[in-house]
Structures are given as structure tokens and as C-alpha cells.
Length: 378
Ligand code: SF4
View (spheres, rainbow, N blue to C red):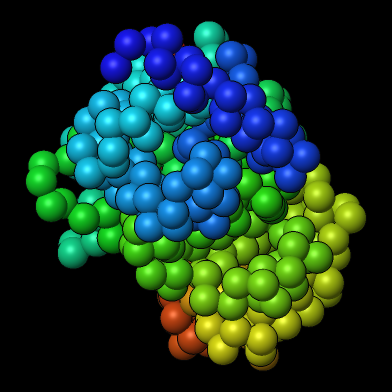
């Protein structure tokens, strides 16, 4: 079809649709040329857009499936859409994607991928094989404003929130890089950033992950992790009760928690406990507490005792992880003896305790090590 034809018949509805989309608030995220980035639209938004462009709901579903299930970025390859409509899309829309920069493979099978958002701005995601699971740990922010003292992301400062499309892309592009039919079984929002500080975009990405025309992942396979924003914990329980919740506790001693996590000065342990109970009561699910053991900071038997006291009355699981050395902090990993003593104190007193292996430490992919910088791992 000659361009003049497309121009005459496509530009007019395109201009109209742009005006309508502006009015109804579609995100034109980062589309410098004003074309709509379809990676940023939920299914309902895609259908709405397609209807504005004169097509049926069914076409919206087809388009959405090409983008989010099949990972197709080129309209010409969407062969079950009419040629006219594909040409219209070329003018009105775009499907953006993250740029893959570097992949690191650990001796334990963990794989870290560095993605570029825009020149010089990097994020990371980590693929972790574990028995019959393949878990993808994804980022929700470039950097992090929270500034936890043990975390390379926090120490590197905050750059910006990720869009829903950028969050989803970490899943989609990783999935496309795997051998055929290798399923990513679980998603954890434990990469760079505090998900609750980017709540709307995280939830939008979760909806696409959950959607059968998107990734089709069951909600209970998706876990949101937080350092303890209590209002958001309750909001998640109210709005999305089927998602998993992990809380980075790291200490049940108020003064120690304040030392490690700056927002603990605002949210007391009592308020965090109340929010965790609210979540479990509202959802009927257990909450997971993450506890990073740091030598001489939170690894004593007194600390374990405080932890047992804190979790009383909360249906929960406890994940213990040994701290991994992060440049820029004086913190050290606990000794093996202390680690086991801490775990053994908890075993008869806490419901479910797992001492997790630190995966990917040799490639800077372990808990707390994601820095979003381009450098060779030690
Ligand atoms: S631990 Fe999480 S919340 Fe704290 S600085 Fe790191 S990324 Fe941010």
C-alpha cells in the first residue's frame, strides 16, 4: 500500500485517537515521536485503543497477545491482523523494549542480566534455578531511594521508577532467551528498588504477568517484596489478595532495624507487625519474612529471641540468608557457626524456617548486591 494511502486513511484517525487518548490519559511513555507505546497498555487499555482505531475488541486481544505472550515487536509479523490495520499501527503506535547489555552466568546456574533503559541508566534482573523452580527476580526502580545500609542498590542512589512495560520486559525478554517451552515458574520483586514506591506500575505489570493473554502466571507465583511500607501492605491485601508478600525484616530489635533500614524510623516494628497480621487475615495466606544475617549486627541468640517474639501470632515463613559482601559497607557475613546457631534456635520455636543458599554471589547477583553498574564481576 502506498504511503499516501496510509497517510490519508491512517493519519486522520491517528490524530483523532491521539487527541482522544490524551483526554482519557493513556501513557505516552517515552514515545518521543508521540506514537503510543503499546508495551505500556493493559489489555483493557489496548482494547480501548483498538476500538478508537475502528476495530473490534477481538483485534485488541490479538494485538495484546502478539506483544505480551509472543514477544513480537514488529507489526508486520502479526500475521493474523489485517494489512490495513498493521499499517495503521505503524503510524500510530510502537512496541518498545529494553536493551540487553550484558549477561553474567554464575557457577551455581544463576544468571544476571543487565538492561539499559536509556544511555548510562542500567537495571538488573536475576534468573535463579532451584530444583523444579525457575525464579526471576525483577527490578521495579532504577536505583532505590530507601538507602538500606547493606544494599548496593540503595547505596548507589535513585534514578527513576520503571514503567510497567519496562518491568514486564524483564520477564518477557528473559523468557524469549530461554530454550523453547522452558517456563519461568515464579516472579519475585526483589531486584532493584522498593516496589511499593512504584505501586501503580508494579501492579500494572503484575496484571500483564497474570493475564492469560500475557504471561499467564498464577498470582500466587508472584511475590511482592517490601522493606515495610505498612499502608501499602494493607492496600495490597485489600486490592490483590492472591499475590505473595515478602517483608524484609532483617531485625526484630527496633534500634538495629533503624540502623539498617532508614524507613524503620517512620514505621515501628509494632506497626509492621499489625500490617503483616492484617495481610494474613485478609488474604488467608502466610507472609514471608526475609532476614539477612550480618555478623555482630543481628546474628546473636538475643536477636533470634526477639525474632521469635515478633512473629508470634503471624502465620509466616522465615527465610534466613547470609549477608553477601557489598562494597561501600563495613558489614561482614556471619560465621557458619553463628548462622547455624541462629537457625537452630529458631527451628523449634518458629513455624517454617529456611536457611537459603546465597545464589549468584560470584557474579554480584546475590541478595543486596545488585548495583546496576557495568563492571566485570569478581
Ligand atoms: S534493600 Fe530494597 S528497599 Fe532497601 S535500598 Fe535495597 S532495593 Fe531499596
